[in-house]
Length: 262
Image (cartoon, rainbow, N blue to C red; front, side, top):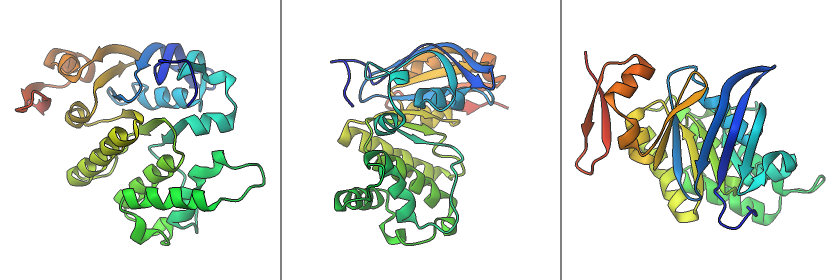
């Protein structure tokens, strides 16, 4: 992604966003450094998904969204798709399409109006499938996959875009703890290997603390806390924002663990 030298991967400045003239998030400021993983957390209906969609230019918004220093509004649709890989929580899954063809959609922003995918595009897709352990399922109909396999296919499509910024909306939805850990491990490995910046929404606060460098806590459409997990995940703050009774434990490496208290 070309932009201002040394600029953050993503900046939101005074962003309000929503649907049909109703703002769901209001006056949000967020800065995401290049190569970082930031997790957006918050109670149901807080505006987490809307915030991610605003960063991708998928919903109406006011304020400034900057990608590597470039205003999102000054970029065409194809340029945005090359800059940002977005994996929605509930993606549209076309009927009668194979895993390979679905992941190939990720290459569309790199093709001309009438161009067909090249050998290089096919190699990029094959690489994404291999990295997500989907190579053996490449020719399977997408609809026949399990929930976890579909989640990996959605991520593979986003990876095939070869974007510098990856936006993941609840990537572990419907996954058991083992598959959730495996998917997040993979995202982290890819981030470190490729220098990709990751912004995700996550319901599981302990997983968010284990994988993200920083957390952004959103409630009622506003950012109410941001910083390292150990600073954001406090019993008092979670009680106030989630109406939850919790205690905060600590792993041997100092990572906070959110444990409910009966």
